[in-house]
Image 1 (cartoon, rainbow, N blue to C red):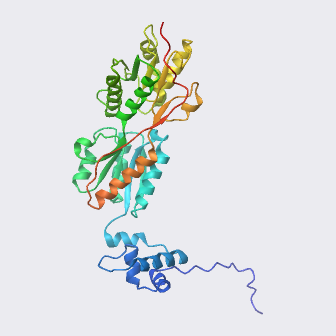
Image 2 (image 1 turned 135 degrees about the vertical axis):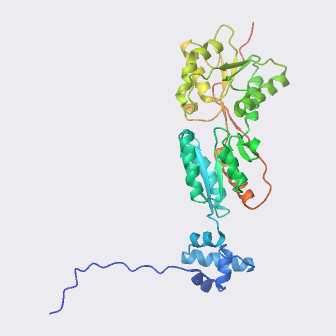
Image 3 (image 1 turned 180 degrees about the horizontal axis):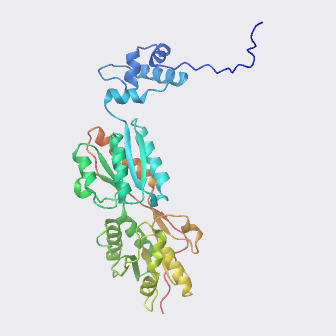
Length: 360
């Protein structure tokens, strides 16, 4: 009696793996040309643009995927770029990574991203990426970390993004143009007729590069208009790096300095959390804004639109920043000279600024 096979499990047929030889056959070229087109073969194989177009069309038609592992082994490279960032940059990370990814993809590279919450995790992440033998690094350091200089000296390209803390070590950077941020914010307020404009910042504004450049831009605009400088710098004793809400630990000090008897008519704020604090402090003192105090922030976080008044601010495009850093990495990997890049700010006018109050 024959066996009943009707209930036997049937497995789908495994699709045939498409190889470079298949692509060569469809494109009408040699396998060596296919390897050369996809960068998989060292040597002097030459091909025309027409042949390249046929290879790419055939690869797309057949669904051919080059083997990156084989390419890595042949070239003794991973084609990976390690990206290290901090977990409190969540407001900008998606766009920043998108820019890096798009910029690297153009050169056949892939980012490998790790985030950290403290210096110990930063060291662990750096070690993990080195074990993966990444070809280069894009990093956001919080301090001058010797490990990055060691990488550079060992021949592994390093690009700093968002900051320029490693500039003294000869490591190229892509960062925000903070001088223009301070200058444009101050010029906007001067254009509205304000003559008593304070800079709200922190006590280390002459030491930290971004706050220093922000201050220098503010000073330049005032000097051009013949106006005096007025810096209101709060202490950082109760401020915890990376904890956004801890700015509010400084509120009593800042409120007294900014909103006392001799308050300014306008303020340039180090960032939008300072602007938010001033709005809240003005509400406690029953000051109408922007009539009593105009202000300009920096960064375009969601709260800038939801608070009243909505915050006039400046923003740096993190997508452009990521793309620029990727171009620097590609330049270093190909032996080209690389310059530092500053991303210019975009001005966003809302309702936190108005004409200066009339005196008299």
